[in-house]
Amino acid sequence: MGTTQLETVPEPKYWHLKTVIGEALDSDFSVGEILPNERELAARFGVARATLRQALEQLELEGRLQRRRGVGTTVAPPRMGVDVSTSPQDWPGAPTDAWQPLDWALALPPAVVARALGTEGEEEVHTVRRMLATHGQPVAAELLYIPSGSVPEVSSGGARSGAARARAVLRGLRKLPLDGQDRAVELGSARADDAKELDRLPGAPVLVVTTRYFSEGRTAVVSVATYRADTCRLTFGDSGDLQIRHEAHHRRAS
Amino acid sequence: MGTTQLETVPEPKYWHLKTVIGEALDSDFSVGEILPNERELAARFGVARATLRQALEQLELEGRLQRRRGVGTTVAPPRMGVDVSTSPQDWPGAPTDAWQPLDWALALPPAVVARALGTEGEEEVHTVRRMLATHGQPVAAELLYIPSGSVPEVSSGGARSGAARARAVLRGLRKLPLDGQDRAVELGSARADDAKELDRLPGAPVLVVTTRYFSEGRTAVVSVATYRADTCRLTFGDSGDLQIRHEAHHRRAS
Image 1 (tube, rainbow over the protein chains, first blue to last red):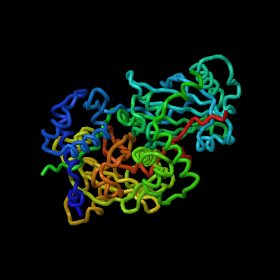
Image 2: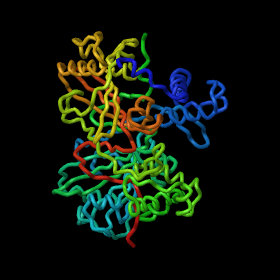
Image 3: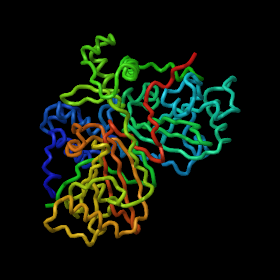
Image 4: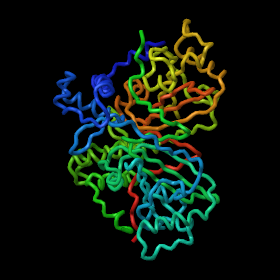
């Protein structure tokens, strides 16, 4: 026990390589720089291509590297902190809300969303698609599910565009009292439509944030938002600019 | 625009297969049941093995399936909600804290942790390893970094075991006023030591929660906790038992 247990866990070879490459990224490369190709890198570090590839995959998962089609592997900038705290509490579409409404549809929600909303099995709900961008980069795509009971004055007909209807639904929401909201974060994979908006491949790992908005004793809105896991850290509380890399934790001084 | 944009995004073949298998999991299989092998499944759904494997990987990423060595692929139970809200605020090791201290070491923190703590380059800090289990299952592993300035009365010598020293350090913390804390969630990959504790393979995707504890105008403690992404949803606010599967969102009634 003591310090021993922390140090004697054997690590696979690619893991050590990952740490070595991570240190090289800090010292020898700058953000946005394109890495040499796999053959050159494998020769430089004296490892097999398969080992190298595993290490690069880990570094990509941790947000240190980005692989882009037609460009190659580049050194990623630090992940952006995106605030997902639930205070101050407000409806989606409030004046301070940075999300952009894109489109609207009447659609059947997934079964779990329908259960949360308490809608009947075949009841369609207002479905608003929104995007969040930071510094011109798309960071998240969202679907808001809003039963017509939450916005009784909003009609689903008319000739307006999807974005205009989306804004009308969100304006309608603001007539309801907001009693509270809650959130959950979990790992997911990017759906094809979200992946396209987020400039990712379908199936890429994403952080899925589900929010329920409560009004008058029931769930008035459910939001399912998909955040890019490669470029975002989700912050709650005031976590400012701390950037923790999940890397070697136990370099000992002695 | 209108409903059109939401429906015309082409989805890759394995994505449709993933939805079909997901529905089969709901209707034909129960939690914990072992799936037929890949050859049988590919034949049952009339697809190539490679397509099947992609669909199974997606379902694993979304927490629907678990692959276990020596067992095969089983139907996963719903993800557990693990509360990571920062209120009520208290030090790690408070009486209501469910984390179990396992071990202790004096070690150099990673550079980003050292920066957050404001420690000097080569200053070792108390490093406490803890585990969180729910219903007998390990769900998270944590490293707490605590500079000696935060617990001046705790000596680093003596013959006590790692767990006893860990508890002594956490007891020492409670003499400090806690001014606040903040949190960030990001995607990471399991380090070998965490993976072993969590019964995962090294490099498996995990949710990394970084917490800073503030006292008297500085960061007194940094925690880096690694949550199993396959079995956990992180909740903040009172999100109760809502379980949102990140699945097909646009089955239309008409």
